[in-house]
Each structure stands twice: as C-alpha cells, then as structure tokens.
Length: 328
Ligand SMILES: [Zn+2]
Ligand SMILES: [Zn+2]
Ligand SMILES: [Zn+2]
Image (cartoon, rainbow, N blue to C red; front, top):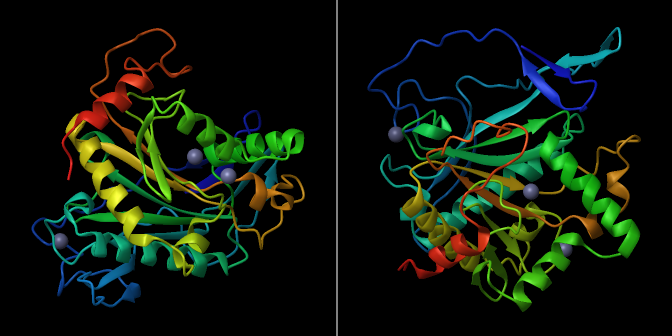
C-alpha cells in the first residue's frame, strides 16, 4: 500500500492491492481474555461513576503503520509516500453487546477521555499532521467488527474534507476576524429551525446544506478549536456532552441502521506546514465538531449524484423529526 496524491484535487489516496484476511469466526478479539487480542496501547481504568475499564488497541489490519518514515517522493509530476501513521481501535466497552447509545453517560465520558488522551499522545509524534476518531456503524457503513468499537487514525497528511474546512475557515477569518462555526451557530440559535438540542455548553443541529438526509452535528457553544484540549480541561462538561452524544445516536438509529461518525478537531499544530499556513490562525478560526452521517437507503438519482450531494429530506424537516422523537 502507498499514499498517492491526486495532482489536481491535491487529495491523498491509499492505493494498493488488498490482501484477503483469513476470518476468525466465533472469536471476538476485543472481548476480555481473547486469545487473539491485539496489542493494548492504553487503558483507562473504571471510574467511580460506573464507567468500566476501556482500552485502545492496535488495529488488527491497520491502514497505516507506526514504524518508519513517510519518505515523501516524486514520481515525475506525482507525489507519493509510505502509509506511515497510526491506526487504533478504541474499545468502547468490555461488553460485547452494549453500543455507545445504550451506555451510561459515565461510560461515554470514559470513551471521550480515552479518545482525547490518545489524540494528545499521537500529536506528540511530529511525523503526524492529523489525528482523528471515527466510527462506521452498520452493514451499509462497512462495519468491520461486531464488538462496539471506534477507530482512531494518525496520518502524515490532513484528510481532504478537513483540509477544505481549514482553508475555508481560515479565509473567513482573514476577511471577518471571526470563526465561521461560531457565526453559523449564532445564526442557527436565533432561528432554531435546524437545532435539535441546545444545551448550556453543546448543541446538536442539522447543517443548512446537509450532504445526506438527517445529517447531524454536535458542537461546543463556546469557541474551541481542539476537542482533546476541551475534553481534558477542568471545565469539560463531559456529562453534558456524553448525554448529548447518547441521545443524538439514539435519534440517528431511529432513522437508519447505519451511520458514519467522525470527529473534526484542529490538526497537529506542532507540525507546521509552510504551504498550508493554517496553524497561524487555526486556534481562532477552527471549531471542533462531531459529524454524523446516517446512511439512508439511497433513492436512486442517476444524474450527478456522485458529483453533487443530493439530500431528499431538508435539514429543517430532519431537525423537526429528530426533535419530535421521544428520547430519554
Ligand atoms: Zn467482543
Ligand atoms: Zn468558533
Ligand atoms: Zn467537519
């Protein structure tokens, strides 16, 4: 496997011929005491509020490998590099049958803390430009393991979607000296037709230009570029965020059995890029958030679907439906 850069869009793509992995039926590698358990990287012990012990483990078939150097090199006009990085599995619970939205707020808080600590730790490695957490749930999201897990990757490049966001929020800031996420949130709260829940410190909302039906974001109300800094700070309001994540995922699960969840946080600002220049104002212009994209059985739209997002349920209708669900 290697990373290749599309010379036109400047996106990095993992390219290679996949090797079939032998299936190990019946043996969950993430249940306690598993014979085939992957290497444990970090563990958070159970807390007094009832959150159980949870661990980060090496992904059994990692997309990125921790050893070596990226060796970024040219092939004529093209750029390529080795798939150096980190790929970890965050085991959300020792129980095989409890997903995040069925967990207690104390358990979800534990998971958020472990995620933040792993991101902080990996950002200490100057080879890595970006670290993120994501979760693919359900058959349509190509869920890989039965055990309730999320994943974490550290990469030597900033992924495309985040790069778009960083460039756009930097441009907005240069023009207005304000954060585009804060401005968006302010406007949405004034006329809350797309707001699903507005709490003291966090908000869930359907974005104005949702890419898929029922897309929903979770954001802190107060400006903060770094998820990991927010979560590990003394004023983290972890319980409020945990409850919001739990209820939001319950809402999502009531409209779809599959979803993608991704955390967007600030890139590794220890790793300064001369081309991108984002680190100069990124703490002012970027605002961390969690994006959840449900996968709804596609109503076939043959034309341009792959080039332009087409959402057949408006953000306003989606938010209204989410608000009306009885969620505890
Ligand atoms: Zn298991
Ligand atoms: Zn902001
Ligand atoms: Zn984002």
